[in-house]
Length: 194
Length: 418
Image 1 (spheres, helix red, strand yellow):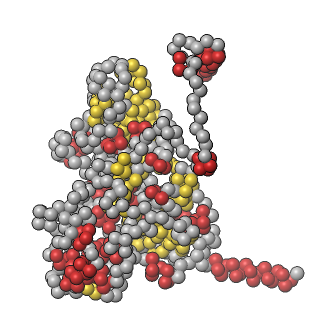
Image 2: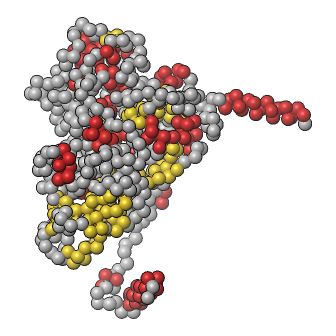
Image 3: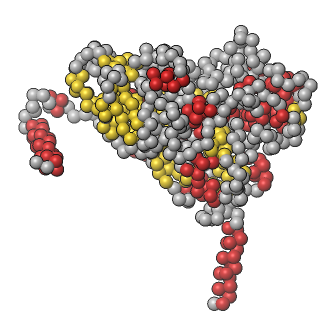
């Protein structure tokens, strides 16, 4: 009897130990490993602190734009294809699709509307190329980002993009956007709006 | 006579009428009820094993979703863009899952996710990062709520003909899931956190930045939609419901919640970025809004007489308190009746008795939510921004303007903006 009580105590202590690896109130779920978090966490914030090692230039990006067949959807000059315009067009080539509001295509591609270069890196990394998402290596993403930034006149051709330089790129829309005010339960979406 | 007695007398009278009808059908059909007379009984539908397993609607019912004209779905890549719900045929407040509008930000494939392999991870600025299977989430305390969703593209244009075109990018379902606040409390949010990034598992890994305050308030990690698992077009196996916020924030195929210190400017975030903080606020939360679904564009009234005007009202700020209807283009307004429960951030059905005299008129509805905010007219919106109220008026933020239908003297119904 005494040994069974001891066994019970050991089991409870054991549960308490593994409980640390589960949600504290319900004991459901588990703690992800560092490797799992690293693999899943593809979010790159505006300060770029999650950017991985690696680097690339516009020249390397130009080669990748062809080799990875980016031009197939985005157009040979980065505009006029069915996929969003990447390089601001001369006005002659135009996306076949009507623009949403705000329009982030044709004369206002991502490099001009996004306030941070990190958003471009993040999106290429997570969502491109179509059907082969997530296959680009970090240096390839840096190179393609550099290519887009250079072709839109935002960085120089020889500027190397990496975890340090990319978040520092001064984007055209950096100081021309506003975020919604702090949200509070039970308040109208905008005070004073009819 | 007390109102109670009056109600009972009415019930007895109506019951007597029903009994009379039933008796009449059995003995001699009344002259005005020939449909119940000598015709043969309806043909039988042969049931199949498949239909016994999972039923379908009558083949006489033809109501369908329609892709927006500007870009087809599926498109040339096989991706889905924006597909509208047939509001003109809607009854009640729940949209059938099969008819719920579908929107993806810039076109996306519908992923085929095995729920046994799907995981939701919560990490970032938390004391205890956690990872859950779908089955584990289903073990946790849950709630069921009715909420609408609406796409920012839901804006009426003069070229639109039907209510499906003008307003079909909103729908309303019963959603079941775990409060996001519960999951965040289990993970232990650290001080200094103010946003979360919610991310989906589809090919483009769509992500959005959400205020932590909203996540702790009423967001739900849903696995249930209208009594069954969330449909693939709507986020199977897990969808984040962010009540009252613009549709894009309601992340489908939810796989990851990262707690962060600031707005993360994801691809979806940047695509809706505004230069003016007022527009940013109007972009985020849906204002009080309503629309008449009958009579509506391309429907036709057979002649003067009694009709029940009906429609839907909703607000991103809470429950609908009241709806008014105007029969004279907005000069005078009369209260309509609410015909359904008025849940917070949910479609609410209204009805209005109308005896049409056969003259041309412009009918419209406006809604007031529980905060007392009244759905604005286009004229009021134009005045707020100090711009002309004409056909070129581009409404900033999410469009919740009062919408007119013009009923012509022959009973045809037209877009009142045209």
